[in-house]
Length: 367
Image 1: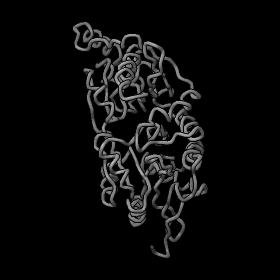
Image 2: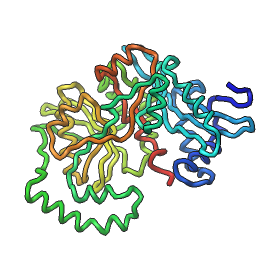
Image 3: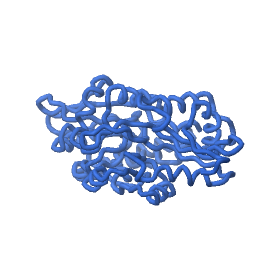
Image 4: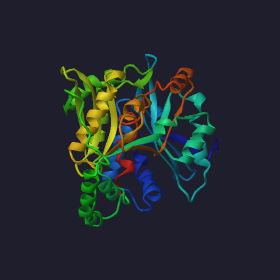
């Protein structure tokens, strides 16, 4: 590494520079970041219970003190075959387009698989995925997909207009969409979802979820630890994400009152429910949880529901019509541990949703 530049852990005092770079690259606004952004950024990248400089974000600083590249990361505790380790959830990777790419190259090299216990992302662009492959990382094709179940096709088409299309523009199409969906329902193209016999769901309080969350993923060899301090912090951060609606958790019970799982999502009726996680007590309960979730979201007035694919849930989803899959972003892992690679090969790793970046405001807010 050149003596004139340096790679170093990101510091709190860097936020103003990093924020300006974020707005320049991702929002096409050559301006300073807002106080709201700076406060959120600080809590996101310096507030985790497991934060330390060595497992957080890194920057590349030029000889004159300018930050030209940033690799942001949030530490998360993971269990690998029962052994605890601190992983790094990679977030935004930024490089100033008006400066040398040397910093970006050096930051990418820090992600070499032989140097990582566990480093992952579920929001990688094609370029980032290629860079991670080049340094020994692997892409998880199935987990790079998103499922979508449409309840109201015409209203869904209106919702899928450009994300920042004006509210009035979208609203003007709603009467026609409502008429179209009524006709589609009448001719039976998309029959209503029937709930599983005797199954019900209800709001799950954060405290109850924190108690049960580790048990929902306990049968994965590679899984988030979700200790109470960490899952409490993640839920707090996720609750700040308002653009897709309120964060909600609903617990699913079978016909004898046993907890068989839960689902976590952002949503507001009349929009698309953004599901973060579908968690089942056992693999046999997956079908009950998925079916009850889809029934609840349809009956609550959502136009569609979508979320990240978990391989173990594919059979449960295959029972439903009007459902499709599409690529959203790459899920990638970099690790030096053979047991992690083996777990990936047999779909025995839990990533995404609360164990991912989908709850972060950086992807959807600050326009």
